[in-house]
Amino acid sequence: MAQDSMKARLRHHLATRISTLRPPRDGRMTNPLPALRTLTRKQWLFFLVALAGWTWDAFDFFTVSLTATEIAETLDRSVTDITWGITLVLMLRSVGALIFGVCSDKFGRKWPFIFNCMLFIALELGTGFVQTYKQFLAVRALFGIAMGGIYGNCAATALEDCPIVARGIVSGMLQEGYALGYLLAVIFNRALTSTTAHGWRSLFWFGAAPPVLIIIFRLCLPETDSYLAQRELERSSPRAEFFRMAKASFKGYWHIMVYLVILMAGFNFMSHGSQDLYPTMLTVQLGFSTNKNTVTMVVANLGAIAGGIVFGHISDSLGRRLSIMIACVLGGALIYPWAFVRDNGIMAAVFFLQFMVQGAWGVVPIYLSELSPPAMRAFIVGTAYQLGNLASSASSTIEAKIGERFPLEALSTSTVKRYDYGKVMAIFMGCVFGFVLIVIFLGPEHRGAELSVRDGDEEYDADMDKGGHLHAERHASLAANKEISNETV
Image (cartoon, rainbow, N blue to C red; front, top):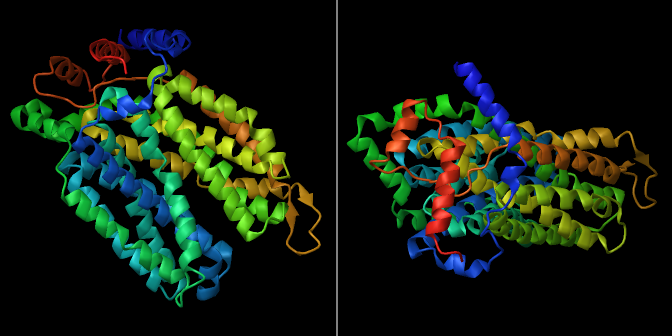
């Protein structure tokens, strides 16, 4: 009987994949400013501290990739050896997501976040003082754990108290802390690495300072209202004890978790596949100078920031899945100019390609949050993201290896071997856009879902008795009711 019911639900789910893409009747495009005005002062502060934490996570990650050559010279190793530090970070992020995700859901958003930032300080300083290659790898491995723990916490802090009408744009603004972190890393790398006596070490020592300010910022803020409601429910009802709810959530949400990991693998292939090897293509294949390369990548990240905010906002009107699918289709249409334009038009091509890539990404924080159970939100969001990151960690290696099949003549000014990376990345990105398009089309959507559990929520209690599965139909009903009860912005 249960198996027949599951098959029936699966058939219904597949049969409604097209009809559920239809935007709501009142889902017209709106001015984002009134939506942002619905945030209270406390909600803005939660968003800003989460953005600061996520931005500095990205800054810390990119400092190694930007200074790999200088680090290799100091430690007397090859650049390839140094890039293992990047690989270790990506591999161990999932460990951090597991540890800090559980701590954030059990003990609150505040103190795990603060401890996470304290690790940033210690490990940034430590990286600046390493004297051997083994020390470098050990510090970066620990950094991977610290970096992996911040994303789920930041998403929960910024979004779980956010008004429904502003969730999309806040999601987009939060996600683009990643691109902002890259821009800051580029700026301070140029300002410190080649102008100070200690070179690349100065960049890492500087990187340890802003987390001090972020910690002070977070100390001044309380826990989120949603987390406090969750803990109050635990205290008032034995049925809501944390580990009991966690067990029920895993039992009911395991299939959602698997889906999210597969989806995030596609998303991370999308970002790494379009970013990691692109600077190499510009310098080695096209012969761009260091300055022109930097300017091109800055333009790309400006496009990324704009795209994340725009698509995050329109997802409130068009829906999460449809917005991501539009970004994938338009991104696919831009692959040719992005990969094959050779004149100054490349600036426009890279701007709009990253606009679409990060446009799709801008929907991710709120999409993951709305699909996750309140009791395990930080854990599931962070772990799904980082496991997807782990799956995609070989993106640049795959592209580089395939690129060796398409050799080009060496430039007259250089003896470095050249390959047609543009062709490889075009093929790779076409496959990735298609993969994400299919996965998101087949997936669920809980736009407008309740992000907190409050005492006396009988429907939630009943769902927990059934294994923690909050059915899509209930979420759709919640979303519809909230759209009706909230005045359209």
